[in-house]
Image 1 (cartoon, each protein chain N blue to C red):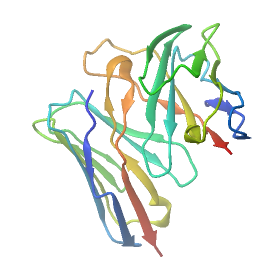
Image 2 (image 1 turned 60 degrees about the horizontal axis):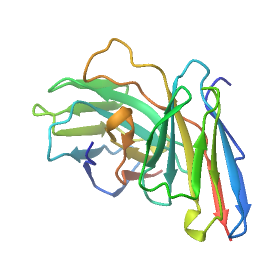
Image 3 (image 1 turned 180 degrees about the vertical axis):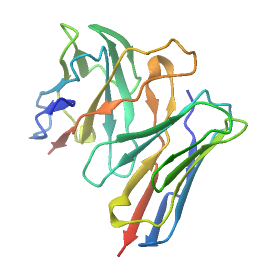
Length: 110
Length: 120
């Protein structure tokens, strides 16, 4: 498995603004997962994307998997303070171990 | 709570001491992973168990680290002769058997709250 590059590393927004984080790979991915880790907490699974061009929504969160399966994005509409945390897009290695990058840390100012 | 549990949640030790952490996965999950996370970084894979068999160990896992899952249920991670560089959050995660057999599908991992190790 290969680690993906995630940008930005850090973003702070005003509450109510939108937020997007991007993950890019140089190789085709079989699938990608998204996790959220609150400050002081542990990673929590959000979603898994498998199909080319797939788009999935969870309330204010929209996840996309690129047509070439080399990139993915997470968009949050109208951020809230509860969205604070670090968002990771790990890829899968052998035995389905997760390969994490540094993630994108989101700060939301009320 | 039927999630993954870890014990202890915090451990402070002096350099050179041995420490042991325990992880209790979700009961029906046969796959168990250990990760290590330092400040500002994502978790790094350490080792993987399928039932009681340890099938993969990261090169990050030096000879001072050993992990077991004797009955395919709980797991322990022991660090001998701790060093200051071992200070980190040690996370355990479990996952059920892959369903459906689809070649590109895999199951989410459920993480425990972690054990924060501080080596003085």
